[in-house]
Amino acid sequence: MWLSLAFLSALLLGGYEVFKKAALNNNAVIPVLLLNTLFCSLLFLPFIILSYAAPELMRDTIFYVPHVDARTHLYIFGKSCIVLTSWLFAYFATKHLPITIAGPIKASQPILTLVGALVIFGERLNLYQWIGVILAVVSFIMLSLSGKKEGINFKHNLWILFIVLATVTGAMSALYDKYLMSHNFDRMTVLVWYSYYQFGLMALISLIMWYPRRKTTTPFKWRNSIFFISLFLVCADFVYFYALSYPDSMISIVSMIRRSSVVVSFIAGALIFKEKNIKDKSADLILVLLGMLFLYIGTRA
Image (cartoon, rainbow, N blue to C red):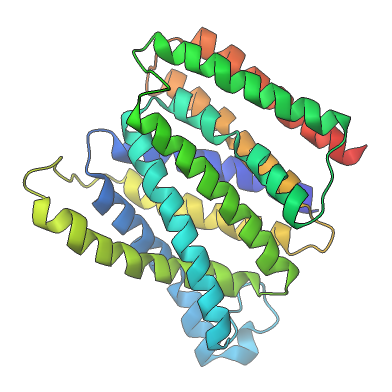
């Protein structure tokens, strides 16, 4: 069951990436991210109100948000800091890079998650999984060659560095999620409250970094896609945490499957955003997907 949920989360995550690119093109990044965290928080508000006002009605549902102690909130705040760091890097990179380059790089995140799972959770890689790792590394090298055709130098491009940092911190977040779920943290509690903490952090960042300079930077434009970023993300994360709550779920595999969302964003890059060198990048994407396939085969072996 958790595998099916992981694939559903990947589909929703692909939609999230497409709406994110549409919202960020020629737009101010920080207010878009601020509104994203705000809408995510508002989408969860009914569940908090009902859980506190009518616990007997919500307790036996998957939407129940139980009371938790300060220690639990501290752990959730830690997740908020990790995720928001990843998002800040990813949003700036998404604005400035073609989605057909940023997507496949971000899709390599399961490789880092695998290494972390190897060290932290004692998961072991077999031959098939090592082949998947090697294919992912080769695909990154090939992608750098494709990027040069568009004037993107992987060694000296700030936005490439940002998407790499977003990938690293994203892997950290995935490992932290598995830690929380393996220690019986309630998935709905984590999902709801980390959204609120992120909004608080983003409000502070906006006041310090964006608002005083808003007239001298890229102007902010409201687009309907901004709301759909939040909607698709909330749905994708809810399904993701539900998958991780299964005792036999493997974070390395769930994370890998979620990254298959790159197929959705890649198709959108070709058909909607009319990006260049699609043929060359398709070969890179195939290698990424082959790497994921070998990781999956290795897990089922």
